[in-house]
Amino acid sequence: MSGMPGSSSGIWFDSPLPFYEKGALVMFCGRRGGTSKGPYESLNASYKVGDDPKAVARNREMIARAMGVDPGRLVTMRQVHGTAIVEANEPFDDPPLADALYTTNPELVLCVLTADCIPLAAFWTEARLLLMAHVGWRGALQRFPELIVRHLKGLGADAHDLLFALGPSIKRPWYMVGEDVRQRFDRLADSYRAEDYFTDIDGGFIFDLTKLVVDQLKRAGANRENIWVSEYCTFFRPDLFFSYRRDGKRSGRQMSCGRIMAR
Image (tube, rainbow, N blue to C red):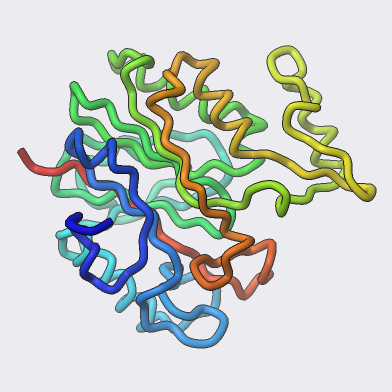
């Protein structure tokens, strides 16, 4: 990502160029470039996984600098695998229970923490409105990507013109689930064929969450040409990413960030 803000910070990240060209900086950070030690090495951004809080604070300071803001302008939420979408006009004193934040304030950086789930960015270029969301299998089961598109349409956006980006996440063939998870998706049978997303293998199933999220965005009206998908798998690349499914409870969390660039 040569030439983009943050590329010289020492922090590794993946970033959708279409967003940058249209006026928004989105950084899907990995685990490289931070100060944490042990299983949290090195850019863990979560205070809730057992890491040294001072190291987490330093890591967040580094991320904030890469995004061009003070650490106090990083806006987070308490992610609960739900479907709440909250507007952010200023940093929260008490982060809301939500899985998506949106803003038109270029002084804020919206943040999502993940360790296998999909960090999802959406940009309504005409209104200069940016949304950052967290989508796992529970969110997909609740059609959260569809709800996000509908929410933006309710604000006046044309779904076909929205830009979307799916950051690094666990991908097939590494995303294995059991029959219990597979059966829950029967409730989507009216719109989505389970066999398109689940592959039976050795008594379990390989789940293609990325494909399902893309299809849900499309069903809600998004243009596939405007959906950018990171090629990186968090499970497969321990050198670049934290992965809860690979490393368990002592896994760190990578931070994904989005900011509207000032005109």
